[in-house]
Every structure is written in structure tokens, then in C-alpha cells.
Image 1 (cartoon, helix red, strand yellow):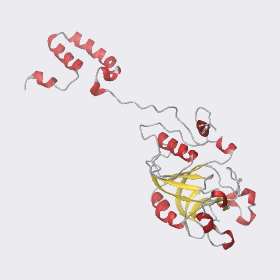
Image 2 (image 1 turned 60 degrees about the vertical axis):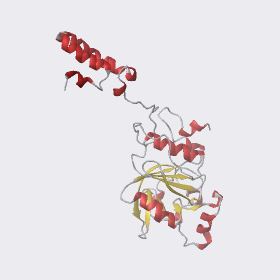
Image 3 (image 1 turned 135 degrees about the horizontal axis):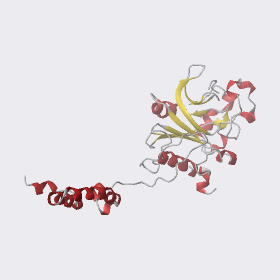
Image 4 (image 1 turned 30 degrees about the horizontal axis):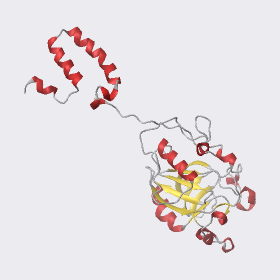
Length: 276
């Protein structure tokens, strides 16, 4: 093979440099080498084959208080809800999770308290299933301190909230041996198949109505349909931990979901022990 053939496919400036090396002194070649980093920084206009794609990631974000700060890697900018209906808040948070990688390559769940609906996503942000949910009787985004250590009979109606936030969740069992997804072990908050032992509460019927207005009945745990738990939620978390994001429902709760610039995530739109 002729030496000239070895230059085929190389960027023109590099090929020129190699030809120059055969005709000039060593010190001229060193000058070219010193210029090479400068040429590389000029991007695709000089070395199209060597240009590196850059992605606008924006500021690093944190959600909510205490959530890990993650680097923004090139990735899809939106969660894939497929044909599932979802509120603007749910879409906003799901897109942020996918864009920022806050789920740390783990499956994740969104609990939209305002719509009383649960969405399960793969680690890549593709919807695996959605279902209605029953939530804590009281409106609120904070848990009463120490409530996880109290007897259910001592928990007053106004204390029966489903706290908002970001929770590392895993499958486990309650004191009765039933399989559940632990959301907040210390706060005794879990996600589990709907409890129907108290006929007067009509929990199964509440899940089947088209409105979320009658879905507030539990002591704080998140009740979902049995089939949904078995076929969607459990497979998603089998053999792995995941993240559960419980969306806030009060103005004070929304202010806790703070980005690094000090603004609320929602401002971007404008404005485990006992099982109950």
C-alpha cells in the first residue's frame, strides 16, 4: 500500500499535518501538535468526524428537600405515558424525573393525590400501568411525628394524611404477613391491595367510581386494586428497590419541591408497620 493511501478517511487538516511531517523539520511538526487542541475545540466546522454532541441540560435540580442531586446525562426529555390520561402536575414531575435521572435507573411510581391515581413507570420512564387509589382521609402533605409507632385506634381523622415526598420503596410484608410495597417504613405508609374487611367503608366501590372525591378513606396508606398490585406494581419492584413520588396537594407542600435555583418545581407551570 502506498503511504498516501493511509491518509484516506482522515480529516483534511490531519492529513495535511502528516504530509508536512515528511517534508519539514521536527520543530514545525511540534508547532502543529500545539495547535491541534485549539483546532479540536472549534467543533464540527474543522473536524466533523471528531465533533462531540452536546446536550442542553439546564441547571441541576433537587426534588423534594433531601432528594439526591444528579448529573443531567443525555436522555429522553419526557416520560412516556402512552395513552394514559394524567394531570399537568403528574406530567410535569414525570418529565422532570426522566430528564434529571432522579430515579437513579430504578422503576418509579407517581402518586397523584389530587386525582387519586397511581402511575408505575419503568426505569427508562415508560408507563407500565395506572390505576385509581384510595388515600389518607385528611388533606395534607406532612405526617404527624411518631405516627408510625401509634395504634390505629389512636390516630385521629385529621392526622390521617398521605405524606408527599420522594421515598425509596421496596416490597415487604406487614404484620399480618400480607405482601405490600413499603413507601415510608418509619411512618407506617405502604402501598397495598385494597382492604375490604370493613364493609361500611365501601373501599372497593370507591375505587370504581369515576371521581376522586370519594377516594379519601385510609389512615394514610395507598390502596390500589388487587389485580394492579399483582400484575403491575409487584413485577416492577421484584428484585429491586424503586422510588415513589407522592405529589403534594397543598400550597405549603408544593413549596417543598424546590429546585437548585430556590424556586418550586410547580412554579415552572405558573401557578410501616400496620396496614390500614
